[in-house]
Image 1 (tube, rainbow, N blue to C red):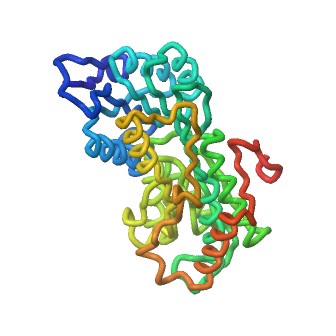
Image 2 (image 1 turned 180 degrees about the vertical axis):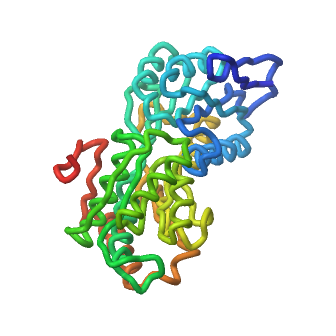
Image 3 (image 1 turned 45 degrees about the vertical axis):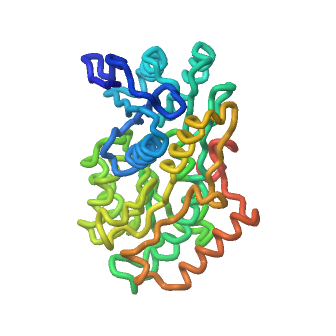
Length: 344
C-alpha cells in the first residue's frame, strides 16, 4: 500500500512497500503536492485536495497528497522523490515548483506532470491556468459599490477597501490587480489598500493586518492568503465589517461577515486531469484554461449577504461578467502582461 510518511528533513518520504492493488487501466499512482499553507487552509489546498480525492474515487486510481514543512525550498527534491517512488502523475499546487518541474520533466519522460497557475514547456507537462483576475475584477466591482453605501450595516462612507496577499508574486498579484481594476471601473478615485502577510499559514498575522486596515477606514478586505486568510475573516467578524473569501466558498466561515468569495475551481481542474490520466488521455504539452467563460472562476452565491446587497449592484456585476465573457472588457493579467502602471 502506498504510504506518505513525515521525516526529519521536513517532507514526505515516499515508499511503495507492499504490492499495490489493480488500478484503473493499471496506471501508476498519482501524487498531489500541497502548496504553502498546507491542508486545512480552507482555501486553495483544501479545494484542490477535494478534487483530487473525487478524481481518485471516480477512476480507481491510487494516490496520496504530499505535504512538506518547506515545500518552496524543497520543491525539486520532493518532486524527484515522487517520480523515483513510482508516481506516474505528479500534480503540484505550489507556484515556485514551475521551473524545477520543467527541468524534471525532461529527466522523467515517463511521468506526467501538472503545474498550476502558470505555463511550462514539455510534452509530458500540463499547465492549468485560471482567470483569477476575472473573478477578482467582479469582487472589486462589488466591493466598490458596497463600500460607500452606509445603509448597509458595517459600511462607512469612505471609498476605502483593502486586499491582503500571502506573498508578493505574480500568482498572487494576478488576483490583486484584477480586484483593483474592477474597483476602479466603478470608482476611479477609490483607495485600495494593499499588503502582504508573507505567509499562507498564519491566521493570527492575518487577523492583525486586517484589523489595521479596518482601523484605517477600510470596511471590506479581500483575502488572497490561504490559511492566513482565516484570520482576515475572523477580523471582519470581530470588527463588524466584511471580508472577501478566496478559492472556495468561504461565506459560511463567518455568515454575514463574508461579502462574497472568489471561487477558483481547482477541484474541477484536478479531477479532470486525473480522469484524463486514467483514460490514457493525459493533456501533456497543453494549456488548460479555466475562466469565467469556462465556469472556472466565479463569485459565490452569497447566500448570507445577497439579501442586504441592493439588486442594482448585483445587476451591475452580472453585466460586467457578461462583458468580460463577450470580450468587451479586457481584465489585466499580470501573469502574461506584466504589471500595469497603476500597480507599480
